[in-house]
Length: 476
Image 1 (cartoon, one colour):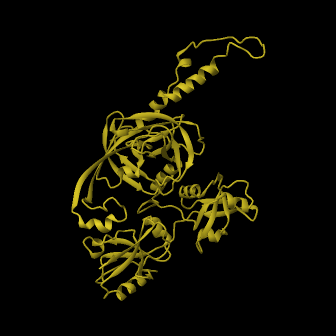
Image 2 (cartoon, one colour; image 1 turned 135 degrees about the horizontal axis):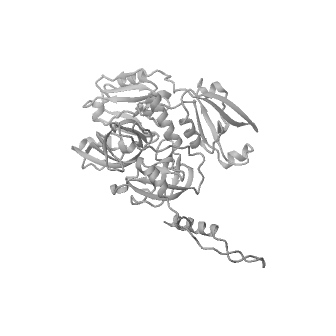
Image 3 (cartoon, one colour; image 1 turned 180 degrees about the horizontal axis):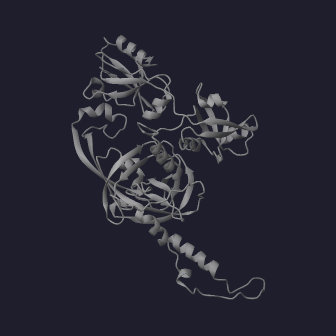
């Protein structure tokens, strides 16, 4: 409401000349509002345009967990120690929001709203309910796609628009189903663009808004004043679960990239198959910028380059500062990662870099991550605590597929057989096996040799990496 009042005041001030002039000039003619349009400012036309395409999403999933263990709440320790507590199953119901973006019944929402759901129902603003089928769950971006079959009934569709033209201060609306009370519209402004350091998803690049967003709003649209969808509301910063005026939306650029990837079949185990350019980068600090003569500390500093990857072949070098990708300025490493993730596979890219006090351009082609070294899968059969685990070698393709963090070589667990010794010690798919004792695991064959050497041991010392964290466990 404060924004409505502020805008109304501005409208009146602009429309009604002052009765006083400055410096003794002739007085201006005063006037009063003469129509409803002059005294009323409303977002109703925008809401009427977009709200019919916004849906409430209800899901059911069976959750299996263990109770009564002090480690049950710890994401790392729980799998290793939770086996001492009884298993309990319960049906978990959740709610969220979504928006129809295609006449075929395609709905965009958040991945966390629909992940692992056994039953999904989408309810339109007119009350019609449709069973929904999960089409894609892209965990890295926290975006999900659903499809409903309206049986030939025309569906209202919202239009997606690029978010690049947005500016801090622009007015936006958030539409969703907070706390399950029903469709609700809140207003606010764009508080920040390219917001990072949120740890909400893998790309950490968000539109920040102060429009009230609460639990249940997840997956609903963030709407610009022309009635287009420029983001999908995903998360909030909160101390108690309620809105504090700090909400985050996934930019529409990522939304459109996910939809395009699904249509073209460029999907992987975790969602969308994204390009790999073969380098890593970090932010440019003020000290780094000053040392190389940059006027301001912006861009992404190339930290490492994979041998024979696209970046290496294109001539990128360690220490280069990436300043733009095509015609889009790159402010930091998070934005660079985001922009690369939205590129269509096979597209041509012009990268602008700063090297040796000169600006240069390099040409790339967006290519899938390679599987080098080969996976060389091995299902461990020896009589050891790792029996029942299938392990594979780590490669860029495996990192992308399994969402591995902070591990670019060695082996990773691909799957674990239920009830096996590996399952009983809590090993999970995606875990890296870093070392046995003080001997590092370089590949699947090395792991087999180390297991064979330790076969007669009564004490196993394993170093496991999960979500980028190493933990050494001792088993007897």
